[in-house]
Image (cartoon, rainbow, N blue to C red; front, top):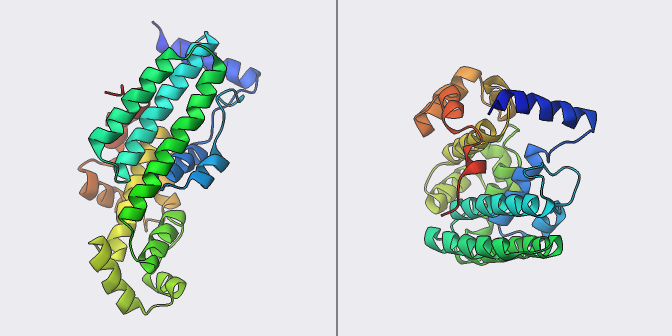
Length: 248
């Protein structure tokens, strides 16, 4: 099979008929909202599978929807594991839903199951987050950091946000989270960079600039320190592999 030829043909058709895919940023925000247990935000970002932006994975419309929902369940499962859901429980839940997908006989059934999956995982993650809740001030800092990874974040800014002295906040954050504020920010930026390298075509320099590293060389050094790979090698190893991973 000539994959490059087929890819060029699909890109041509998509341009001709103005077909696009969901933006990377919106997709990641949707999965993150479920990971955070934020069902209201997940509902806001929810896109039904019959929207025009959905990719075509099969000529059979029902099978196409099934493929998309299986992929969605795989993504949500992994995000929830990262968010603290016990791995075995997460995979068992995904097995149940994938078997349910296989039994669906109509688009309506798929769409109803899609909403059920999102609600179920989000509500389970909400319970998990409440059980492992940090003090309010630390939670506010964590949320601010996630929302502003593309901006400069300082301890002074965070201390203003929660109305604590920088020294006290630094000690509190380290006690509750286990690492310093700056180490946590770097960790989250590296995790975001991993996703961008896996699922987008942004260059190393663009990712470095977007995530506010002081330079591309600093980004490369930090990324290798945290992952064991250079950004280039990481992309070669993992680019878009999670989209095709089977759920076991």
